[in-house]
Length: 592
Image 1: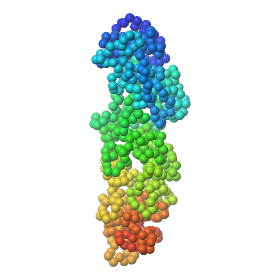
Image 2: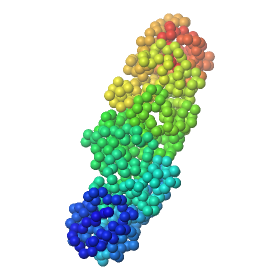
Image 3: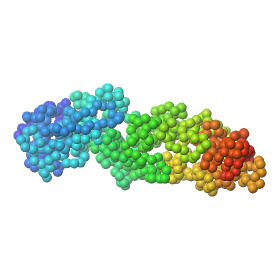
Image 4: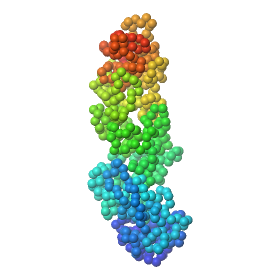
């Protein structure tokens, strides 16, 4: 039973106590040792501990309860009720029917909405005078106001129908411990808060380490195996406090509250701590909790532009054609993400629990391959971006660029077709598979030889390239200028053919050295690095530099291993079906 203490032995205290105990048993959970309202913030008597307390009133319980002349609300309610109309919580994902507060929530709000004087009780002809001229609840986290859209929903029926519709809630039959529903099977303020017991802080009904209160009802898929559920990382005290409303000091200890706020949330529909979506991630992923500083990556020259939009992302949006945007949650599921390395094409644990588009263009959830995530925005999406390089055969759908039926492609969706690629550097072989992030990645990440975080968050090279790749002609060839290609392909092997001589003898070797070193032609002027539908060797000319030959054709035709002929005009030279025998298989472009 509850023990309602008084600051003094006022007349009628025992009767009040016994009456309150009798009627409150259905509302409040069984007490723990030391359960008392005395000396808590809810002790508003003159001898209460807080700055908000009465001038002279010695009663403790009457601020809420009375055995006689109450408001008619149970349990023996004494405090005047609010007449406010509230804005309830709402979101695109909620399956509950949420209306105006009822039951105990309505009683709590008679103080906590800030519209009714704290001393306004039914058993006093005038309001109880409070110290320091305080009348209503002061502005701050305890004053919820009448806009409850930024607070966890209350006063909704939690039944099997809701559980079935939501898919990530526990059976209401299991809610029989400290977290429980009211007698109408509704979730109320008292499901999480016990107004007579502050032993756990914030009048919580139980210890909330690891968001034990949250997971009493919520069972997000894969949460128990996620990094955010298990990490023992702590805040180093620098920058924004990642846990502004908790006393826990580790990621695991904060659980859901690493990102979410049950009251006065910055992002209302998602109940996130901060209004800008990315700040909920940056508070930890700035090097101040997580080891790697991802926040800084988004200040680079080329990025996934998460800073450009706010409030656009929605969990229920069309995964293929949403309003054009990108946020952290588009590429990472914070309830499922974990540290789990993988081998191409399998997606790593960082991408766990996400939806994707597979090689046939169908929606899959969860995705299994990394490229399936990239295809959500860079394949069949109607709002996908333009090509970075002008092309003879324009194709901006990366799913189609990599499809196995193409004449040539880098081995992202499937293994490559060319089994003779002598320029490959170890550990690459003609049997290797690739990730999109083998090319699109942080230029200072561990994968690039630096110490920063891996991933296509940002790079100093467009379009989010791990290493430099110049896309225009007339640049001097160097390891640095074409570092992305030389990451996998031996520069010595590619440039081992002889330079083109002034005699321009027909049949003389005219391979990579001639084009890249002598003529200063960019790799991308001839090669389309994703894939080409009808041309071998990734040949897809850039019309800014390569135009039709005098024969009216612009084409490359492979005539066998390391040989072919071109009809084109390039750098002022007309090539009318000119044959180009190369000096050996060492010059064959990388496996396609």
